[in-house]
Image (cartoon, rainbow, N blue to C red):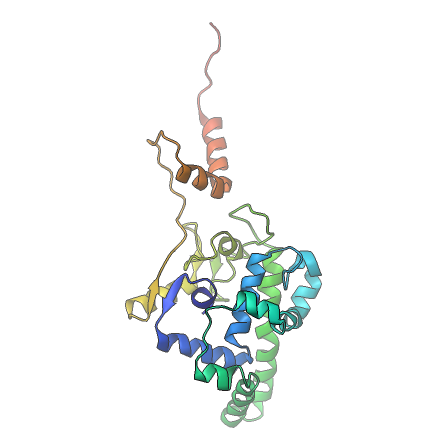
Amino acid sequence: MHRDQSHGGLILHRALRHVFRFWLWFSSGAVTRQWVAVHRRHHALADQQGDPHSPVVFGLRRVVFEGYELYKDAARDPETLRNYGRGTPEDWIERHLYSAHPFLGLVVFSAVHLLLFGVPAVVMLAVHLVAQPFFAGGVINGLGHALGYRSFEMPTTATNLVPWALLLGGEELHNNHHAFPRSARFSVQRWEFDIGWLWIRLFSALGLAKVRWVAPRPHFERRRRDLDADTVNALFVNRMHVLPRRSASTRSAPARSTAG
């Protein structure tokens, strides 16, 4: 839903989109419009004053361990919802259930677990309620701006935590996502893996999703001589990939005599 609702990198079938809307409300008590608005504000003001959960602004420790509180503060801000929450669902069920009773989902979620699993459900729910905001907020929004590697140099501190994004739906490739927010695929290098993209390909094959745009992979054309605006833009965006290759080719080139 992140790539669909927040950035429009793909279009989900209405039924599948509602599954994700329901699960967001049911498992976390979050409202789609609030989540989307806070996330868009993060991209618009990344690592500046106004970023709702930047380690640069609030400090890494606070974002990692109090990320949920920072999110809720931003989600309650009417100006954030007005400026960044446009285009999100406003149907009957959103108005009368999801937005009107956000924590009812968690209550039902907890009751279902207790009915199905009994006393062990208490431990399961405790782990869920701690792990979900910690990984979604603390790890991605905190460590995702402090640890890892950077494929693209830009004003934000966003990093890729690992090249194989398996555990958090592809969100580990945070630097790539900040470089190309609208891309439905977060992996850019051929050695990176985005498990979210695997699901998107599956949904597309089933007719449940339509990809609108993906970030281009770096491609080097040895024979090209002209320098147009697209080439300049590609060089700028991919300079962290181009410069090492250029340096390596320069070092490996045979020395030429300058004696006349």
